[in-house]
Image (tube, rainbow, N blue to C red):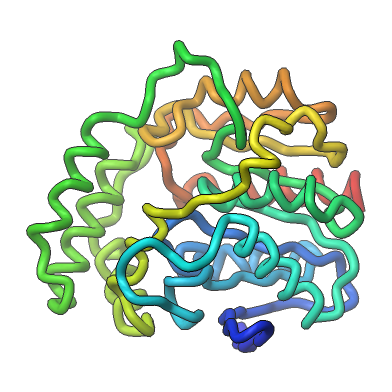
Length: 283
């Protein structure tokens, strides 16, 4: 993949791309605290082989993009949406197919409302509605919250300690339908640690605010939407998909049985094929 630093309004966003520039563009939007590396390079390659120009990128405060001192971030959710559109402008892409995971899925929903003419379709992976959901849906699993609380005990300057902590978290978020590859998880965490401008700044995502004028307007999204969700997601409960299906005008669902909050290699074929069919219908 080819790296490209996109600069605008004193912000630097690190991107990587693969594929032919003339093919339909897919922008991969990752979730909170995670860099672009969690969109595995081989996953991107296989998606590009379907005939797409694929871009992945680091959000602010992760990876090689602009970072800020630890605390409340001096930017909003809307700013992160503007970042995505800034990438498109730099690449001279007029319309894009957004694929967002977790927080990336919320940003994709916001982008569909803020930049309707730039977004051709959405794929929302392991996420929920940017707005109210069913109050009876279970919240984030207590195990996840307990694990996050342990972050204060980690030496964030120690690569091995950081990798072990992140791999433990990834294992906890995995579903029973897959075997978690600890070695691969450790290697990915170490690679992310080594390339980060300021690794600890990722925690700024916990203080993200904004989007109030867009909150609860999911039913206004006009673009066709593909939902992909695991039945054992401990962060965004699978039942959020039913809320999205009711709210969205054009939506279909791919259910991943036994999958957690993860982009597991064993699901890649199903995920890539579904995205391919979705984009083909809406290119």
